[in-house]
Amino acid sequence: MKLSPREAEGYFARPDPGKTGLLIYGADAMRVSLKRQQMLAALLGPGAEEEMRLTRMPASDLRKDPAQLLDAVKAVGFFPGIRAVFVEDANDSATPAITTALEAWQPGDAQIVVTAGQLKASSKLRKAFETHTNAYATGIYDDPPSRAEIERILSEAGVRDVPGDSMSALADIANDIGPGDFSRMIEKLSLYKHGDNSPLTLEDIDAVAPQSTEAALDDLLNVVAEGRSADIGPVLRRLQAQGTNAVTLCIGATRHFRTLYTIAAHPGGAAQGIGGLRPPLYGKRRDRMLRQAQGWGAQKLQNALTILTDTDLQLRSAGQSAPALALTERAMIRLAMLARAR
Image (tube, rainbow, N blue to C red):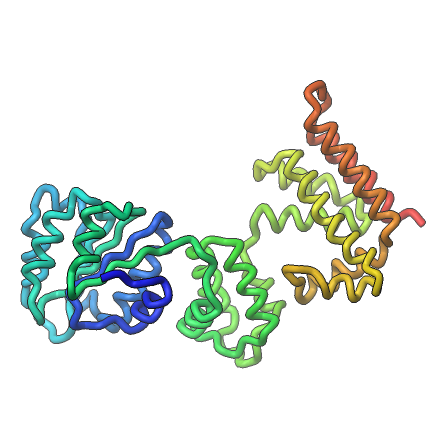
């Protein structure tokens, strides 16, 4: 039987111990792995590994010894409780062994949990689970996590008092980074807040959020927008070491200054302009962007965008021979000097 994404979320949290098995497949191996971990933890409870109630086997082993899956499903455990057999990285070549185990399954046997990569609708493995009357199949897609899913991850980590602005910031981060990085970030957040019963603040999130190339780019753009020309070189060197090219820097700067212009040029003033941004800005970043927009003003921001447009055209020109990063650094210095001009 098929499980829709909405149905699957509920099933991962409360799996049915009377089912024969579950197939979880998807292109993102990390997302599939996290869902499998959630489902097995909810199905088996604590201590499953120590009590030998969970058997793991790579699907590649089933080609050499197809019977080992059925043997593991039928094996009698030493400890009471629900048992499961986890088959990892399956594909259609493992289908005969898995189908045999599904057909021979009886109540009291270990539940069969299988993970796989992206499977076509015609996949024999998918059909084996989707056509089975007592087993499920569900696909994991690269959709951003829902608010309910983020709340579940926070609750499992012991982070409970989360105001609306902090939840919105976490949702933005979850959309920007992979599920594995987000889970690790929440683990760090749980440790950071250990023993602290105060509400989760934006400062708490900033303290543990992953520092990526985008974060370094934000540092550069803030340095430029705030007129700190002496700091441009070191930040540029750091970005260069991370592999960021000149065109990417120019595009990022154009986006930043266009946002500042949108804020500054709003008919109702900068405060209304920043309030109308989508997606919205929060906390310190919102305050910083507002100060930058107010300090520049709409006219100077127009001049800044002209400089960036000229630099972008120069970088993309077929006849360009000057070093691209040197051109970009010169443009950033010009912008920093313009920020200080009165």
